[in-house]
Length: 474
Ligand SMILES: Nc1ncnc2c1ncn2[C@@H]1O[C@H](COP(=O)(O)OP(=O)(O)O)[C@@H](O)[C@H]1O
Ligand SMILES: [Mg+2]
Image (spheres, rainbow, N blue to C red):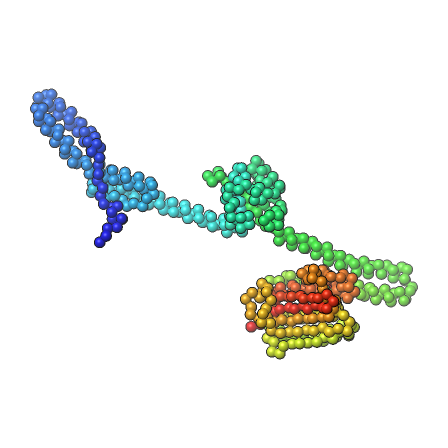
């Protein structure tokens, strides 16, 4: 059988240098030598006997202490190897007790150091993982503003090689850099908000803290950056929305107040003017009421945005309902509604009242923004190629409904903004037909809640087609 290196290492190595052996033997024999010399001086022992006795003494003590010396040498080599962290087994020692115990103690000490080292290493790697799982950007910088460490979020945002870069190279914003300087000098943490154009146009909320203990790694400050771009955008949208909604309500309200004042004053006794003004006032009140209803619809949809409706909705029935309900509008403009509904269309997944609201809004727009004496076509079919949309990534089919009109059409630049709240291509026209500017925003919210999709195709002068997609109810 081949001997393994493991076994080879364990073979006894009892080389002891001659000079060491001689030194030890002479040292041990020093006292008996003095006694022998005294015997010679006192004539108790002849010089030749003394020499024989000394030589015998040297040889016997040499034989006795040689294994001890060999053990000490082997142990010394063993300890040196362990200090160098090499994987070595304990040497095989002569069975002289003390040395074996010492060797066992060294081995135990080595194992306990080894397990401590392993614990330390796993603690360090745990901390690394912990720091990397923090979603905020973490930059640790030294006294000179140089990045010492960065977490995964930081590397993802600012690039892989951040260590040794200056903070201003990575996040060169005046406010941030000034705050960092102040925290460095005052030892008091600070928070700032700032904007960076690179690598992405983003707003950040930064927390800057002095590192609480002296760090062997040279970390002096920790800078945490939270991306608040989305938050800022939502804040701005909310502010815009409140301003828009107030404006939309103020206009009819101002007109109502104006007419009331006129009716109370100058037109008090003018029945013809009163009848005309009351008609306008009813229109304005109706507009306010529609606006408030639409705003309530939107807020209800926003509250339930995360619950997906899962009912089975018969789309064909709904389309017939919408057609029947649009009678008054179609007569006014002499618009004909044509239906093209695929037989055996599977049910759509969703909430009936909301899908009804979507179709109603689209058909309403098609009639209102369509030409007089034109045709509005509503189609419904099972689409085998759902649109490229995040909500249909894993779907093989969708219930599709399209509404086509023969209206003025919508220029390309408006298409992507049509579903924004209060966005209108032609403000005056929308007012004239009684629009609130919220119809398509409601449509988009309903589709989002249903995890559906919408596509808009339009040619100026020809007309528009709005197509909506719902998941098939399984
Ligand atoms: N079928 C359509 N043809 C032309 N323009 C349309 C059509 N549907 C919507 N629009 C345009 O989109 C805008 C937003 O529509 P919507 O959100 O329903 O609001 P509104 O209350 O004004 O109808 C409308 O003001 C109009 O300019
Ligand atoms: Mg509308």
